[in-house]
Length: 361
Image (tube, rainbow, N blue to C red; front, side):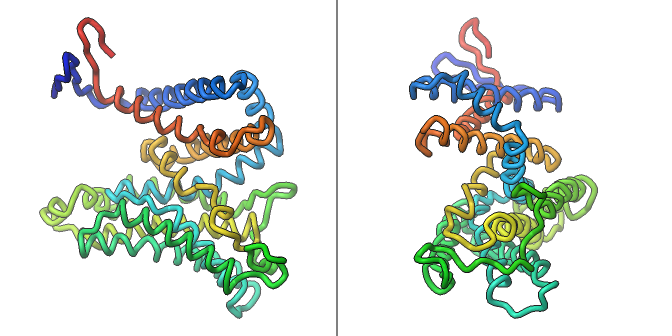
């Protein structure tokens, strides 16, 4: 057991916790995040009990649950996509950009490609996934061929993707009937994703999101390809020693990751907005939120469903308190930050035991 001494403190590594302990740690992280948020509410002059009551009461109505589910769809697809990359050892921070490129691909098919109408929606879904996967391939090729750090490249490509979307909607793709607003023309109804009546829930992508979480779980637990991707994620030297194709396995992982995230972008433009809008309107930070979702799930694809639901609930709660309590957007965005901070603290305490004199944590 490793012991580190820091000014009288002893930090000892714990044994790897079992599944029940890991679940308990995740629950503890969520509870801590609510406590931290309550403190910030109080500092803002708002009764935390009233704020949380408002969130829970309005969220768990029919319209509230419908809105949670609408937000769950892109978060779930992005979370599952990121889990694929993370389990392959790829720090994909570029889900936001891959989502936007998926939206661009679907818009191109919807408005500018002459195709038989019954094929337009399936083609938009396919091309959106291809655009997302292609955008994800660029940083992994740079990593494999030139050893470029994928954290930096995927993050920077988010800004490039955002610039591409804004250029298109302010420039060549700007709608002729939008009276100056940065939107494209509305999509023809042949490319609209069907909705559950009375909601904005585009159910085909919801089904695909749940299905993808199951398939990714099977990929990594039951197939040779998934095993090879996990091994190659440990490093090129290990992959070479075991005779595994390092570059191709990482590329396959990133194609799957980017394709799933790109599908989330298709869902937003074909199911929710039914047109391409400026970048921050298409995605409410779903790609970044999914990073939290992936780690909250413990990189378990099946765990991505409850973690995506929790994050969608928090985003809906953010909107509720922003409108009802008049909080600025930045203040109402505290939830995600509190969850991430709580997860880091709880994960550290789950892995290490801290001793200071007679006190042990």
